[in-house]
Length: 47
Image 1: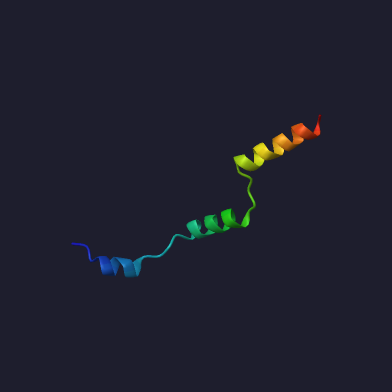
Image 2: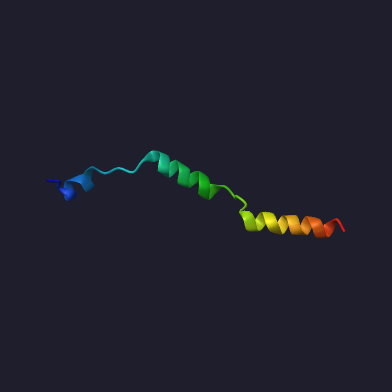
């Protein structure tokens, strides 16, 4: 039988997850809304 309290004591977070979270939060990535807005502004500016 598993001792959940003991298992929780031995738990450690995966470093790759921490590194991935940091990379995602530190980058100013554009989402699809930003891309569509930029395309619309570009099309209006070319007229």
